[in-house]
Image 1 (cartoon, rainbow, N blue to C red):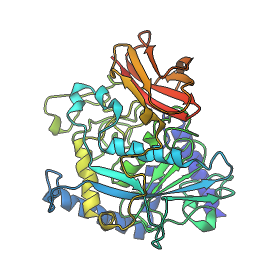
Image 2 (image 1 turned 60 degrees about the horizontal axis):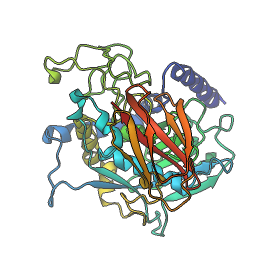
Image 3 (image 1 turned 90 degrees about the vertical axis):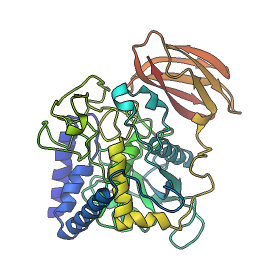
Length: 431
């Protein structure tokens, strides 16, 4: 009972804190709780030490191996925990999230072209890809997805990070598959106010992985504005690879740090609306020289809305690689036999968005849209701003048409297409 009371108290405190901020990541709060366990702390410190030694031995951030520096493909298992049919998200929605991870970690995301000149040369191809596993822990074929009907988590039926109830059969969740062979992602209904959380390298192997609420996973189906582009999972997988929030989880310019030189110092989290001119600190790392850059609100490890997020930095790539190569459990993923399910890493054929072409992008206001799908072209189209608000809406029955957005201010927008074939989201940048 004491533990339950503490969990509720922590969740209410977390909810109160996050209500003042534009996004809802519980990772650092859980990280602090886990560090209070001496065994967990020892594992995390060992992982930090190994990663630091790797960085010292590989200052360029490149691991030289025979045959070059291969892209690491990480097998993923997605555990869907559902209380009703809506929460039992589709395979297509899951595939849409895998596609986003691959685009974001390979710097192939459409809105990377919206980065300002001060940051565009810093955007990194992390050289990591993801696929749904093809073999389960017993060597049997799988599509990389498990589905568990549940009555929910321990607190008011919601899953929460402090009791880790999503991660165990005994508490209404699903036991992790071996975390040295799979990246485990649990999708469920989290406690209100939380979008997701992750576990840092070296922590408890029984709970290692990422948890995402079902309304912020992927780009179709149950996603809810403004978390409609899959960037919550990109953010949390960044934590899983050892990244901190770019503002250092402090409220000033001096005490906190994300340990990355090329992410500008910031006094607090982004306020969600992609304030590209925001410059909350001027005491930058010496790496920047005489330049005082704005806050990197476009970084996946800030709290900006999905449509604003566009990059990992090169410094973040080095840190992620240092854990992938330095931490024993992460390094074991290199030799995982879990394989990839038939759809492959880059095919993600279930992505309806693949059947849309939008050009030019960036645009001065007018974009041409072509739909190459075989289903009926009748579509409802919404134009959403950075806050997830619908700023324009119309319908079409044509496979090729033009959208005039010249009445909208410059910025990043999402085009949401809804029709017989499902829902697709594409980004467009207005200059």
